[in-house]
Figure 1 (tube, helix red, strand yellow):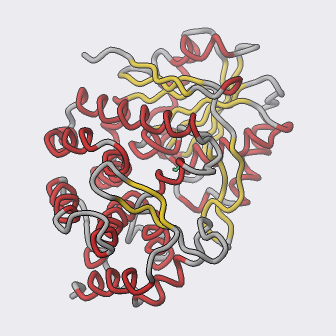
Figure 2: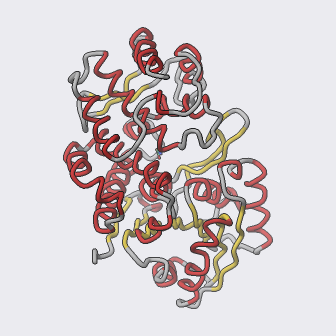
Length: 373
Ligand code: GLY
């Protein structure tokens, strides 16, 4: 069995560890206890995750003498809005959370972002611990301190940078994920190889299928390598003034596709990231930045994993290229009216580009849309 790993996120007085391993829920109390001022925690979770893991978390805390209350919200992206934020904040105040207490976020990206933001504003800021239960949350959203909610204007438009005090990524929890959710999270794993670590992409090509089937040692390595990469980038650029933008590889396309599909289960975020990464390599090849065969290699791996790679793989109709480009213009990464893309000179060699010719973008989208049945 693989040992427990600790990846440190060196952010001065906001530094913390991401603990990665198996059986971490049972050890949650022992791992969190050194951070606590009093042996009392409030857990924010959602009902589906609560049914699977809440008892184990509370037992793990109890083993170290930590009492806990739990607030279980409705599952799903709709919870990550003003009403869900009110429910979380009022619930934490009902639970008498004090300024020096620590909130525990138990769930996927929705709960981590929401509970983290609630913690950021509760009593002008309390600390929180992330216990991510999805692959996407373990490799991406639980690390780096982006917290927030969606508004009617778009996703993640209200929020705060608020770093967790600790992240516990328990590999065993990935066993309870539906296959579709696991693969969607894998979209974010592949992203790390594509943006900055060609050797990791080679490793994923060799090991991805076995990892998806359930090999826990391979899952552990993939989570650790992803977290190491994220921790490195976040520690160099916490508030996304530069390098952190590379983590948005595939996301300008993805956000337009999520908007075009109404943020519905026609397209999960990680599925949009995977298709967006393939399109980002198409665009890079079209602009002569990377070899013409590189997009095919990216797609071949995603297909070997059983993932969608094309606009045509998204069920239902999509709007035309012009409408998709319009939706990209709503993205919060737009600066001075310029669309911002993460492009690549090859696998593992991404960079920020604010000067994409519209014609190249339109033709990449038109070619993709033409494949629709
Ligand atoms: N998910 C992208 C970031 O944390 O910057």
